[in-house]
Image (cartoon, rainbow, N blue to C red):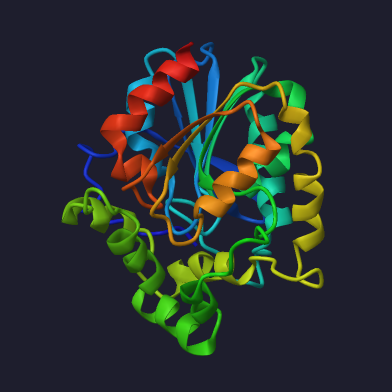
Length: 301
């Protein structure tokens, strides 16, 4: 079940970290990074689709001298195992359970800074709303923890991905991961070697299962699996009214557009917002020089 990532693609220059694995039972391993002193304040970074812990590599490098950086790869993503549907339920509820189990296994005693991006928002906040007292700070990067805002629409590209042809292109040709590396950086086009590293874990039909299942699991209608869970999480976001929050936002994101940013501002009106007009969905990649120092200052402050 384990993925094969060519070492000549994911170079230690980009990803110079030691791999850790958490046993989720039934023979499934969840990969995660655990960088920095074990007694340092913890920072939990939760990625989305189709990225993996590689997305946070530069933030880990910047913070690990003062903080304990914990960065999981969701099951089916990155360096975690990639089971088929018979061995794993690719659902939001399962993702939250996975994250919760990992956190509990680490026996963290200090308050956590939570950093989320893309699906990481729903997964991270799905855990956080059950444990608001354990959250010290929030960093929110082009994501959501609520349903599609009423003043926007579901992107056509994602709608197409949920068709039989779109599904075939994702599983057969890695279209979702490939497209993300091409279209999710708008200020600074992604260098080829970095793009290859993003795509590397998704190198076969089997290893692309999660990139498709994530899109298929997006709840749009009350009858969809996960819809009630999303609504429940959104209804509890008020628990973070007084939690220090920073929202660096790429305004050229074709999925998490400014309608999502406005919704975050309604839920967290005290949050510090830094809108980057020319950055795309992979905002931490696209505007690294601008926002990584900002995030580091915020977390260390």
